[in-house]
Length: 295
Image (cartoon, rainbow, N blue to C red; front, side, top):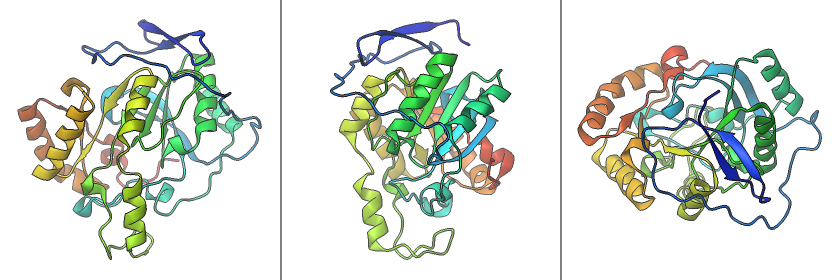
């Protein structure tokens, strides 16, 4: 695990030692812990099936933790229905647009870590993991006991308080380029209607919850999807300025749900990041495995 550790106050007032790598630069955002008004929910039955669809060993393929061995825990259920036009639907549409039922218990997650003792990180992804606060909180207890760094991938629509702070918020807000197009056809043949568009827009940008999450937890990076348009770039920059996010904590990700569409976007994102001073992040799980699901 990393040698550099910071000490943060846990919500109950105690001191929590939580590992994180110290980057070259951080913003000046003060870590303010909201007062906990009631005891946070936890998972009581470790043999109960959870809204967890996949748990597997992999390598982090996006953002500031790129290349690190990790265990991915994928939840099912999402408030969004992301569609990026030629960039395709959300690459985990089976957790959002057509959500499948969870199949894993908490004991299953523990077992996979026991089988991979060299892995010191966890990537909590979805779907939208913040829809399941008891699960997120229980995972912070597990991670705290084993000195595991948790990255949670979120669009920021729900604020989640936890007994131990999450190690990294991977923030991917959904801009106008993610809104489903009327009459588009989903991966399982459903036609987009006004109701689906309204559902997506209802939760798309919750600035107050985003600020609370960035203040509450240990660290973050900003990881927006860019579709190659000037309008998309304008939204990315306006959001960054609004939330006082430094460029060196910004990782631009190309739109695309297949290897072919990503390869087409890579040169465009490469040149833009070099010109504007952003970090670029690939989506190497798609480059490596294309549309194959990681189970």
